[in-house]
Length: 481
Ligand SMILES: [Zn+2]
Ligand SMILES: [Zn+2]
Ligand SMILES: [Zn+2]
Ligand SMILES: [Zn+2]
Image (cartoon, rainbow, N blue to C red):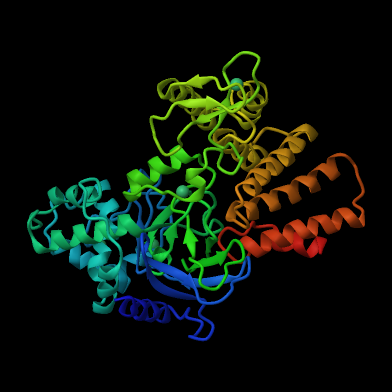
């Protein structure tokens, strides 16, 4: 079984012209107790080394509330909603409408006899990625049917249920609908979020879902030993975040690394139908990062409260120092209120005001390394300098540099090794240092320049030549190295 699957995977990546050859291939597939199918290192893999590349079998829109409508083939934003003139009801640009790729899916969709053929349908749009699964070759279909699949809970097949009403000839018990449901379950179990290059259309904020069969073999761990980036051909490039010894399992994280245990487990349970029990999940302090913690509410205590048993959603919380206890309901009320306040502020207020709130209010309730504090800091780091009609002060830049360092410290405590966020933060520190020296009228000495070159090179190693590479990175590298 493993051998068949491995052969199918190798054929799949060979089809994408991204197979390095048997002698260079760094991975193998093995069946292990508890985990089932695993990706295993065939040899020692150094930190930041590329482990493999994968290309998507299926790619398309997510089940999302997109703010902008985009062409279903080239994914460019359509300033005006233009539906296909052949009446498949999909938004498609005039260039892509003429392509073979569109003709095939257009004909398939129309063969089911659309109702209201001139009206855009959000449900149809969201189901397109699943529909594309019907257009795979025989070999590709065989491969996706070998992939892991959590059997269809009703949530999982929502996007299929919702399009039945769009057609005259697509009945719930038909063979096609059964196939669509199976594809939907496979996608929901395995799909990755895929970004699009931001230079083609700045800040259009569109991401897609893609089925990467080899990427999907990696099992979940909240301290993964890999991270990944995409290039502008939607190729996933998976690299190691630390030394992986021959025979060790290669892990990915299916959830956000800078979320606390409760949030990660709720997310995994809801979206992936399972709960993680990795070392980080079992440790209530999450390797002393206290990323889930809130400040102790007992007067005269400045320590941190955490759930006593992080694996139990209803666990009471306890202070590390004074042993003061909070029941689950009160603790989650505190975190709920704070997180709502934070996300509300992020979407409505300028970053300068948010920074003031972070320094003067939030610090009273949440410790420095708390997940919501981290989220706010990240937003400030990335967005504050982009705000129009605001001129950044020296103090703002100093705050940003400190926030970058705070987050890097938490990442270190979590023993995460190299990761995507680090690549972004190194670049942010570098450009912040450059701006600070300009504002302070400081001449850069050799040591400062070396320091900058070092930060920029670290960014280059992690996100270089990917769609996430900062636009000014190559120029800055030229100047400072
Ligand atoms: Zn197009
Ligand atoms: Zn069409
Ligand atoms: Zn875990
Ligand atoms: Zn206390």
